[in-house]
Length: 371
Image (cartoon, rainbow, N blue to C red; front, side, top):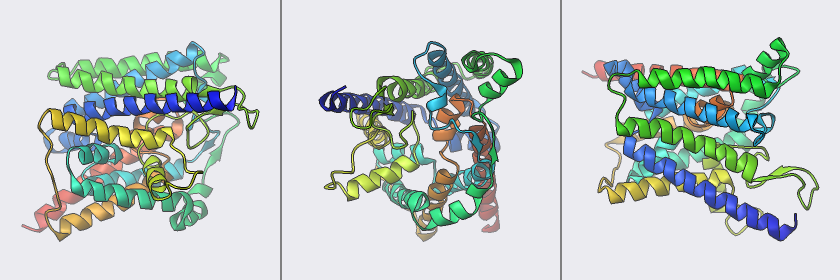
């Protein structure tokens, strides 16, 4: 492939990624698809409807991912989440921090972007603070702390720490076969569980589950198939164009927010280029804004008082630091990572949910103590 052809391919990948992210933003705005909201509904009202949305989305994304893998369209061993190093402590600590922080900040990374599109000025502040905290944890002062503490604790395996690899090793079968079998078993189980909800089978709920899951799977195709180059014209090595990690990626909204701020602040620096992560941030905001304006639900929103401001600032910082430590957010680990059946992703998601429950309990305690 010539350089000109590579540039054309990169542009195409970025545009498709942007459009898919717009679809994600519009669906999320319309259906109120939200992890924190789902957990809050369960804790406060015993309502599992929005959690069923998440279950269906995970199932659809998982089946889509391993269906493409079985067809030879993408390689699961070359994703961002494929690693033989099981960073369980980073996933636990980072996930718990992120989960607690998203309660204080009124939503996770993706919800923050959706709320910005809907007119939330305080979510714009959360976006900035989370991005700064994330960048500091990638390359700055908190990165030094991360590397010296949680990153040191890990378990190294001979193969990638994913359920398909472990099952394939135990049964002596191909990882692709094991992956597809597990995806059908777990993914279909989640979809059936979601559909069994008495009040779930409504258009918005189905749109959220099927639509979000399909977008995540499509993003895997964009980065892992469409953007895959067998031989880069400059390095002569295989490459995944327009990705920050150099590996196949799907949706995630912590590190990409940091990279977006970096791109905006150093725009004139020719080394700062658009990536799938950056355009996905813009895409979610744009998709949410378009839907909000068309549905006339766009509303300007600011902070109530100093305490509300402080909670959002602290929550944003916790999400930035925690999301980088855990290698993802509710979408990055909870959807994209889980769809690959990464063991680290399961630990990170469990920690995020636990942190979210703790945050909700903390809010109730604060409310009761003030009465």
